Image 1 (cartoon, rainbow, N blue to C red):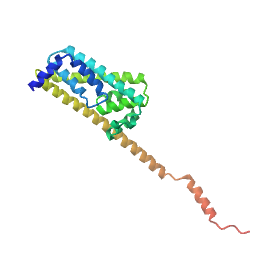
Image 2: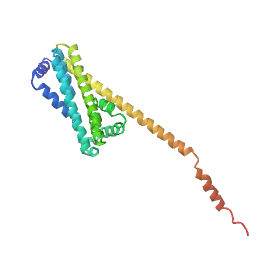
Image 3: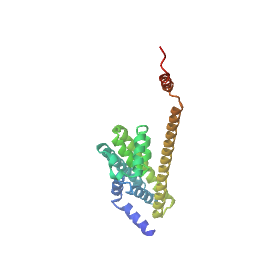
Image 4: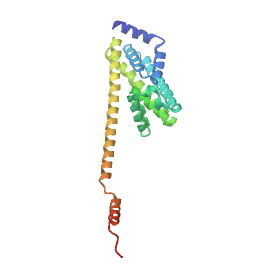
Length: 239
């Protein structure tokens, strides 16, 4: 772990630390596996361990701008291209996320964009869908900015708290912060999936009840049709 501590300390002291944060947070908007959160948490932990508040603030600002730029670029891609047939989004989880985002974005764009920032696949799906359904830029841009700022602040401070708790061990602090961040992201993803599942089951139950109610109601034409049939079945009157 001493080697990792030395490497992280060297990264913080390097002129490449902030550019790496900026590039990683932009790419993370397109490719969720890019470990932008890991980098931000690690830098926050090491900066806190060295009591470098200037670096903590710089990481928050850089991560905010980078995350916002990445989200806006994905939004513009959604406006320009048909995303429903992209091979990268052909998986079941991606298609489910796109469908959920399409149904929910008109109702609560701000809350959806902010919440999705903590769910990698959900973030990409929401931003692409916001563009594809032509969500107004004056609604998307401020929401994306708020989401990026909230995420960058939370992620950096999570690492900073871990760094303060494990003072003198930036490697362990970064590891604790990364695990905590993944746990929170997984928890938010689980909450959203559970909520979506319950809403889907509720809608199915309402639809089934309405169908059963309609089937139980007598058809007003049944009596007319039966009367006509009975009338045609009588023998013709004698003259």
